[in-house]
Image 1 (cartoon, rainbow, N blue to C red):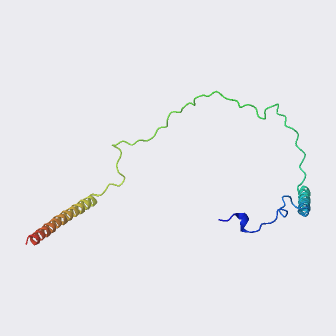
Image 2 (cartoon, helix red, strand yellow; image 1 turned 135 degrees about the vertical axis):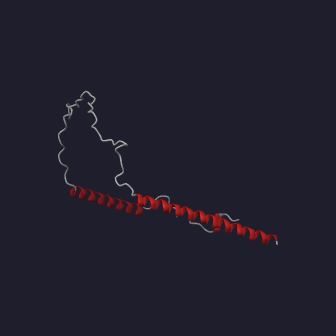
Image 3 (cartoon, helix red, strand yellow; image 1 turned 45 degrees about the horizontal axis):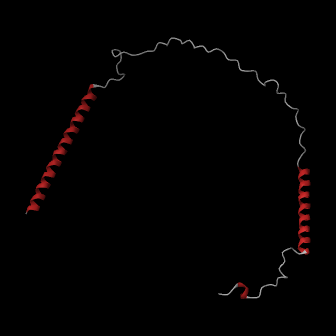
Length: 143
């Protein structure tokens, strides 16, 4: 492996300067002055643009409270009025507004009975079908 010093000629020690040149210093001073001028210019423009503040108001006299202290009244329990009378119907006087006619009751009873009978018949028929299916399946599997 080669050392870094041997890889190539480096700049001579005289050319390496640790301090900036006089020309670089003058450029930096010029830039600094230009920045200061810009800052002053913006400060003047801002001072012109902002309206003057109104004169401060006189100090408040805080020796007296702004509101009087709240007056607390002694608590009293409100007097309750007796409840108003309300109508409560009794079982003897309570009848439905529109009684169901007997003809409608008979029709509903008949319709419900028919529905139950049909459901029972369908259930029995379903049981017969499943028994027949079971019998045929069992005979097929045995034979």
